[in-house]
Amino acid sequence: MLKRFNLPECPVETTLLMMGDRWKVLIVRELLTGTKRFGQLRKGLTGISQKVLTDHLRIMEENGLINRKVYAEVPPRVEYSLTELGQSLKPIHDAMWKWGKQYKEKLNFE
Image (cartoon, rainbow, N blue to C red; front, top):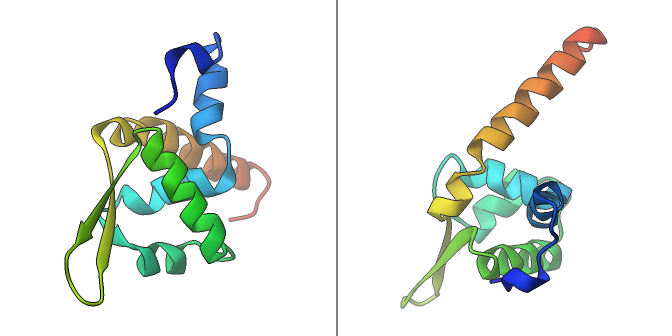
């Protein structure tokens, strides 16, 4: 997890540090619907490479936003879910969805 003294003073900057990347926002979108395996996440994130997804999942786990559960099976099964802190991003996600929908409607994209 990031150490408190490494976080920006501005709360908006902190939020952007945690979620200011396209893939992080979309990973949250996928996990808001429930626990997913790596392949399910990758399928839901068109255009993301395996390496980028792996890197983002690791960072988000370190930052306390997602849980990674490994099952002792052959082949190994790994599942990802949002932590309580990760779930608290839902209102931000919902606001982004609403704004994007309204934007598209204003420009007659729907």
